[in-house]
Length: 398
Image (cartoon, rainbow, N blue to C red):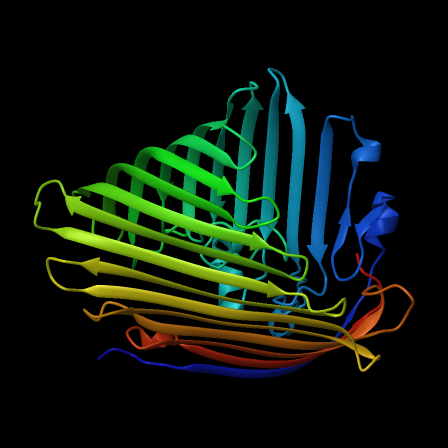
C-alpha cells in the first residue's frame, strides 16, 4: 500500500533583522533607489570593466526567512562586463531568486538560479558572438531585466548583418537541454539546431523577430537507463516586443515538430506561447501580469502534456501616503493525459511596508502574508500546504 500524506503548516513569525549597511561596506554610489539597491562600480575600476551587483530587499516574490529558519533569502543578481583582447566584449551574470518553500530551499536550489556568459564582437559589417546560459525552472528575473526561457541550459552562437537600423538577418547555431535540475521523473532532451533569424524594427514602434531552425534531438529517461531516442527537429519561432513610456508588451510563440529517426511514425509536436505586459499608469503604481502555455503532443499514442503558468505582480508605493504595498501571485500546473503527471503549484505573498526613516527600505516594518501550496495528484506524499504570517522589523540592511 502506498503511503499518502498531505503536509500542512501554518506559522506566525516575528523577525528583527540587523547588520551594517552594504552601502557603507562598499562605499559605492546608489544608481537606482526605491526598492532596488544597485551600485555601479565604474568609478572604482578600469574604464573597460564594470560590475553591477543588484539585490531586492523588498522584491515582491521574496518570502525572506522561510518558516522562521533565520536564513536571509533575498533575490540577488550580479552582472559584469569587460572589453577583452581582439575587440571583443565579455559579459557574465549570476542570479538567485528566492525559494518558494522550505523544501525548495533545502533540496531544489538549482531551480531558482541563473548563470550566463557571453562573448561578442563587431567587425563593422557583421556582428558575432557566443553565449552560454543555464536558467532554472523556478527562476524569476528581477523587474525590468531580460527574460529567458525557463528550465533550459543552452549554448548559442551567431553571425549577424544589419542592413539598416530597422532590418537585420542572423545565422544561428543553438544547442539546448531541458530539465536543468535533473529531475529523475522527467525526460531530459538535448537539441542541436542550425538556422536563420530576421528582425524588423519600427522606429518608436514594435519589433518583430522570425526564425526557422532545423536539427536533431536526443531524449533520455533519467530513471530508465537505456538507449536514447533520436529525432529530427524543425522549429518555427516568432516574437513581438513593443515598449512605451507607460507600458510594455512582449509576445512570443514557438512550434517544434520532431520525428523519431528509428520509427518515422513516432512524431511529437511541442507548442509554447507566452505573453507578458507591464503597466505604469503613474509614478506610484506598477502592474505586471504574465501568462504562458506549453503543450507536448505525442502523435503515436495520443498523449498530451500541458503546462500552463500565470503570474501577477503589483507594486503601489505610498499607499494612502503611509505604506508601500507589494504583491506577487503565481500559478503553475502540469498534466498528462496518460496519467504520468498531474500537479498544481500556487504561491502568493502580499506585503505592507512602513518605512521608519527618510531612506526607503533601510529601516522599516513589514507585515507579510504568504501562501504556498503544491498539490500532486500522482505522488500525493509530495503535496504541501504552507501559510505564513510574518512581521519583520528591519534595523539595518546588510
